[in-house]
Image (cartoon, rainbow, N blue to C red; front, side):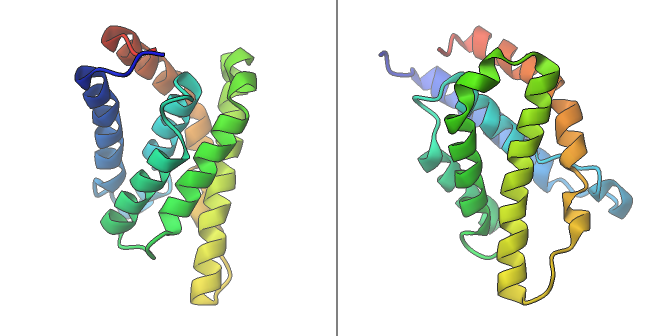
Length: 162
């Protein structure tokens, strides 16, 4: 198995950087409910595309970075992203053979499972019941998956990442 070149590593890092920037960009209050989890979608894509190179450790590090950016409890996003990567890696062979619409639903469910982890941590720490409006973007993730899959696949092909 060949190692990734610096250009390929920077390409993958750039996709995560764009996803993080899209995730922290301020939006009006009403649009916050429609904001997809960009980082989760990109993470699932790379876990499915190159599972031997993008895994739980990278997901954990990205989650720690998100914890710092979001100002959330340290480890909250890290745990959720590691769980997300675990599920994506666990089912990546099945996800690869699904038609795009089934893949979108499955990816939406995987992201929803990681969102539930965040909701559980928040409810345990704050002692209040979870706010289910935080789960509103789940359907947006499903709708965006086919488009982002095609975009990220083209990025992967141009960078010759395999």
